[in-house]
Length: 106
Image (cartoon, rainbow, N blue to C red; front, side, top):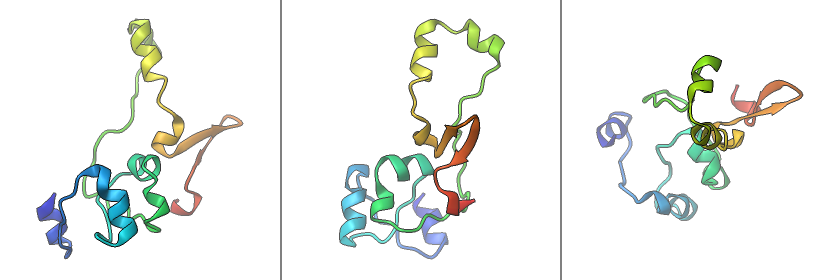
């Protein structure tokens, strides 16, 4: 990832993930390489006003299964998979309609 950051014209600053919030807050770093779920769940949006979607990496962050496959899973797996809050992936359900939690990003 450091090479990608350099190629984009920035200077990479390796940092423990748990220190990114305070690094952004204090100005030790002026940006972070992150994804939507982490940006939201770690509260980075509180100290980093902007989020650039450049798709420099693509990590699967969704679970998709047919009803047939889902029903074949042991109950404990179905239960644990269903416990991921919708806010983790930047979406919510409202009146049967999916809406972005970040309407300005559409």
